Image (tube, rainbow, N blue to C red; front, side, top):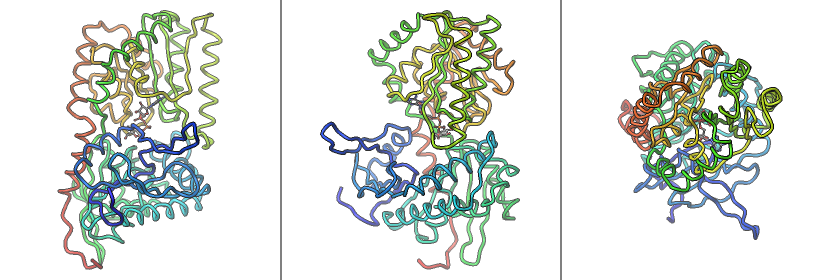
Length: 479
Ligand code: ADQ
């Protein structure tokens, strides 16, 4: 692939590039594609197209030169140490993230954080314009890049621009707290089409445009009309999914099944293995889950080694204070429960603060009788979909919070409100005690849903919606 500037008819912009830098034993550097869902989805839509991906390579300082990996042209965007602190950890993860997740922790506002956010968004927009062919399709991802659509439109009115929101879009009463709410809405309205996880997220966005910008809206479209720019922007739900076929294949491998068995054996072959898998984030309701489990232990409804609870908590955003505090809180609580309820060789809670390869995750899912997905707010929650995908044997039970996007698709889960500790305890017990035959019926239905709505379908649906988004009338600006 020997292309340079302005050559790609599909350009993805996301905070991170889909690769990680690896340093070999001889000190030689190379790049390895990170096996995330987004990459898998993009692989299928980029096949046969000229695709480029614009994003940060993950380390502060000078960016590597653009390079080609797996037939994709990767265009790194540099971030300085200060920009990582202000644009990424600050404005993205300590201002926007809490506001977009129901202000579970208070949002922090600093004007210099927004200044950095704007500067970095401009750098991304310039990089997009540098690689986009005439008339290209540009797909911008997530809350870190909300100003990019308008910036790209300004520079390149010839391209078609879509944006997908991986996290919730908050109700206007919460969004209105953001001092830069106008800039964010105007940034997003630079797109032709905006995709959200849930119908309610899209509606929240449309309502914010009406109430805070005074723009006319009709159904799922917002009318933008300025002297030089008069268009309609559509906002609707296209829920993300996972690579069903790829993950099921991993789960079906004999070595994965073998590993699942080993996991159960090393836990003392419990009657019920309960599992939580999350980034260590205050949105995920890990503390609520542990509290409910702790009360079940106290009441003697569950007891190790018959029931075993494994909580995998991936390290996350450890330079943000709220995340450091959460870690202390969760680890304190796990320590307390283990102090009170463990016996030698039979801990009440197995707590693992690690990241694992996909095959190990699949083995954990296969080993688990009940998976607890209890977020207080979550755009989608892929763990729920990954669990049902791995259960090709139709075993297992899913406890799922009604505050996840996944709840709107996986109707056969054991539904819970994680704030209601008593209700959560009852739901966990129901998930444990429901007869296997009934659980298999529920699991089968959820698996069908994910199989029919996998990540490849999500990506095609998004691109189709972008393709047919309301046509723009003739523009009067530079062409
Ligand atoms: P996240 O908040 O990161 O994503 P989630 O959807 O659960 O949340 O995805 C987490 C991913 O990390 C899953 O694929 C999971 O398997 C993996 N993972 C978790 N713990 C791991 C561990 N210890 N080792 C290895 N892998 C681990 C954001 C939004 C979500 C939305 C996604 C996609 O917050 O709501 O579903 O983007 O749009």
